[in-house]
Length: 529
Image (cartoon, rainbow, N blue to C red; front, side):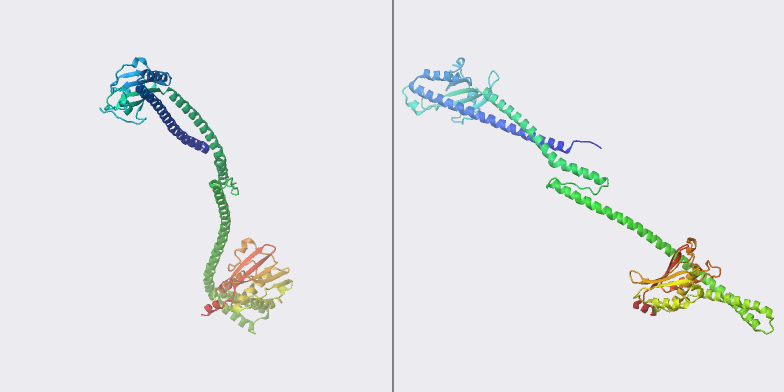
């Protein structure tokens, strides 16, 4: 499994990076605004000082007292925040300066003090704003300073004074140039930036820790629950549920995951049930297919055998009729020796027995159409029992009759149905040589479409090997049987739209179940049509 950065770490790093960029931009804007405000303050301060000096110069000029004005400029220039203060005449000569070695210096229009008004134009600007009259540059020592110039105008009071030496056409008599040191401002700006940087770092750390804690509680914890739940579901534990720790989107996601798990659990149960039912259905279909195969095999066998038996029976019946006829004539002839009569009687008896076998063979081979009608099966069984229960084989047998009340009529050939039940009841009596109980029961199926007749004996039973052949022609376990009774009964029941089933346990008894269709008028109409 490839390990990477956790979700909390990624979110914290991304948010911290965004905050860092935002704080850096804010620091840049803040420091820039702070410097701009400080510069404006310095310009305003310089402008106020220049105005004071200008007014002092105006008063001194009116009184023709230049010494007092120079003294004031010298005292103001001693302030360490000022590099120098100088008066510049109209021709560019430094009339006075707080720096003594500048007095008498002649400045051209390209000098720092002149470019604010002259610039690249030959005609100087008569009026300029305070900010336009300020400039930032570095002095000879490489320190950043601000220069501020203010014009000394030729006012009307000056023109009217007796000492005035300047004509009226001169608007500007000179310039006052003040150089202010920005070292203190830069120092405060650096201190402000350092403090803001430290505050930003603290804010970033505090915000990162707070975001980490909040994400840990609000995101990482629910995500861990969801991951644990997903692992449990992947392991097949579908009864696991996620505990929603909040009502937000993650809480809704937890509920959705729980609903998904419930759906998976229900689908798994349905698949298991479907699988189990499929196995059962496959087994049922397999058994049904086997029964159908056995039925088809038996039907084909009976059909083929029926054709063969019919041919043989016809061929045997003609000579057998002659044997029986001539043996009867011989037995009736008075010339027959009395000692030979028992032998002739034996011939006649065996010939009749052969004729009976041939008759049964012909009956087996013929597929006579049943004459169906609606009959009460309980009444038919009662009639059959009354016919056979007096035979010697039933002396030690108890017959129990369990007939269902309100039994619907069945649509069968009464004669053929009677033949089937007589044959089965007689076979049951033969299986109970030493006596027992014969139980005859009738009932309907769940759909009320067929009537079932169960004939159960407590005889010797049938082995599993013989159980699959009892309906085969000529198969018998009795020494005197022909093996045709059950085959004929099987064919009769099928021709009447029913079927026969058998189950047996060796040594405990056998149960034959005959299923016959319930009478339906629509079926009868179809049959008669």
